[in-house]
Length: 287
Image (cartoon, rainbow, N blue to C red; front, side, top):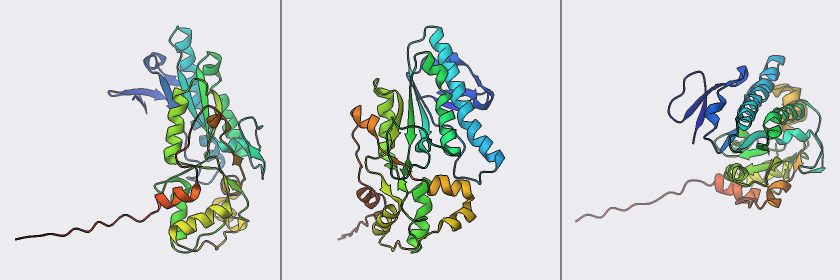
């Protein structure tokens, strides 16, 4: 596996690039069978000031465009066809209430929707050069080591967990193990091109997510976080588009292509992820 590193120096198994400056030696891509592109500044890390919004856009759009142009240049020189699996997000759909959303659904409105649309559009040079491009419209990737689940664990363990806003927003989630499988599946499945929703087949309302998490932790989950409080803490844009927006996304393209989920049920996944470690007892015998 080859890793891309920023800067002008690259070691063994690495490719140097400057994604924001558009600098990448396309000849370094010729031996590669496929590329997985996940670059982008953290959406949830900071308040969305104008400067932060600009970084969120540029870190995704410019890096994708740099890769797409390099792949197109490879194709023009007669290099064999390859695949680009490029990250995107279910934020592409915007806040859509109870509407079921698959890859045929239209785009939404809002900062995250516009960001995801520009992110996907930046891959056009590769698509136009007949490189297979697959956009992973990812939902909430669940792992206790990071992301939204890690941020929720402390308040829930303290008994302060509960629904966000009115709890009716749909959350589209996926187990980390299934997300990794889906990325590998996209690399290896020629029929999978364009956008695919990287989400489990059963999205849940946020209030149901909170209750399921509470049961997995054996803690109450009735302490609501009002929308006004979330907006005061996070800023209106981040709160409304990240926590309160409703996206009932379904993995139509993945399942139609033959993908099988290993962990499609939220309750079973959370029970496994949050189970207490097994304590092993040892006895010593001596003579």
